[in-house]
Length: 132
Image (cartoon, rainbow, N blue to C red):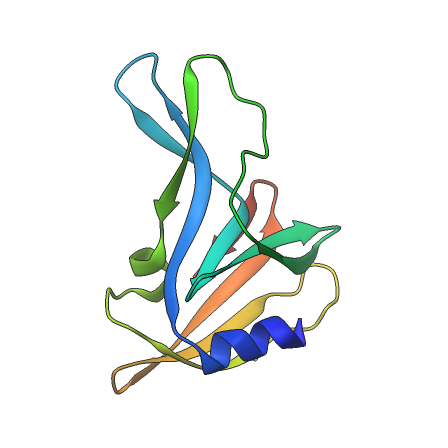
């Protein structure tokens, strides 16, 4: 995780996305699947996921469909950058606190202009990550 944390701290996060599906049977509605979160740093894509209660990551070339879809559903992505960081501006990540033990939160400390803020990514949800 140290390499990933260094990339987060020393580079600019351009976007954060969650995958999901759009139900096209009626009015199109996006249904997020919070088991995986994708962080974009320059041209790199990092997938954050939970395995046995532990937050892990992989570096990806593309984001592929990873769950079964009904025939009337479409795989899709949605940006959650402004929800996660509570801003649309560029942020500077100062530090990341994380212990690689089951069900421990990842705390991302960052600056939004002159305001210091925190995000808590928690793997304690049956449906994937929750964040505060």
